[in-house]
Image (cartoon, rainbow, N blue to C red; front, side, top):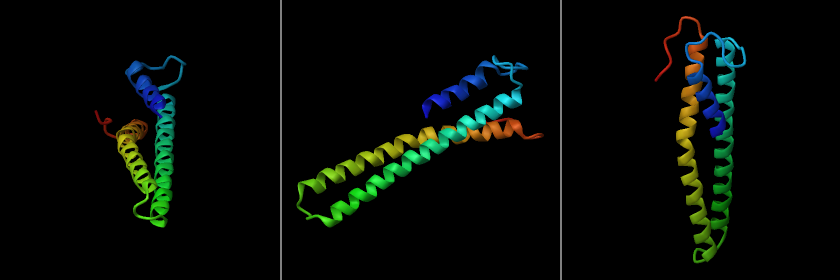
Length: 117
């Protein structure tokens, strides 16, 4: 996921203000490519979040079905906490990808305001 975000940033920064990018594409084509990469980043983040939430739900069902004093329950609860930490860590990357999508859409829409900084 981070690779696509970095590539999007690279395309935006390295060719800002030029007519064509290094591959000879017009700015609109470059922004469409950046939009596609950013949307792929968002999809990947949501898929990772869904996998984490599915794992948490399965662990919760295992804890609920076991005995409360089981050492396994403590391990599962700890693993659930780790998954929640992963979800929180991915939130920033998801926010950056959403901002990139908004910026690309703003550039591509005629008569729209300048993208956010």
